[in-house]
Length: 200
Ligand code: B4P
Image (cartoon, rainbow, N blue to C red; front, side, top):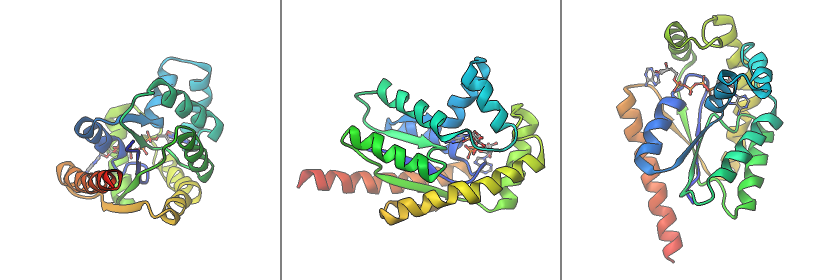
């Protein structure tokens, strides 16, 4: 299997690039942000709990998102691979993901991080908030809170995968097409390396 994590701060373009990657490479897209927003739209108890955290710029509790990912993995037994978008966001989530994948005799192949500076991120999120109706994008204070949480809770996830030699950063500023091209090159190189190992 080819299991990719697209990593980066809020607004770095994970959702934007994920849609293009899954289309080109035939991976199953697992976005915890999208799954949570769907729960909110469906007015489920899980969605109502999640909304309280998301509207404050906080992370939804680990056990909630890990449970969601677990049931999504179960729904796709024959998948060629998964693209994890916005997950894992804490070291506990990363450790849980490693264990879930090990149970399926697979693991994370590569982590690609989108590098974007904070001023650009704030500009993008405020702009998105004007049209998306997303309550976590409309207030600059909440957006800043999301960066604070990112630095404290999510940046250590990068270390977790650097220790495993799987982490690579790609420039996340420029046109969506150019960034996609750079990501595609990394993915193709990784797929070729995986194939040559399995051919040996
Ligand atoms: P997410 O839905 O994951 O979203 P995000 O981090 O805000 O944005 P993303 O990086 O996907 O950016 P996008 O492509 O949309 O998280 C939302 C919330 O859900 C979190 O704050 C948290 O509360 C909760 N949550 C999710 N996962 C969780 C987890 N695992 N654990 C706990 N809580 C969790 O791009 C942003 C904007 O930039 C768009 O408007 C886009 O059009 C624009 N853009 C993209 N690429 C661009 C480019 N190259 N140039 C200019 N603009 C660009």
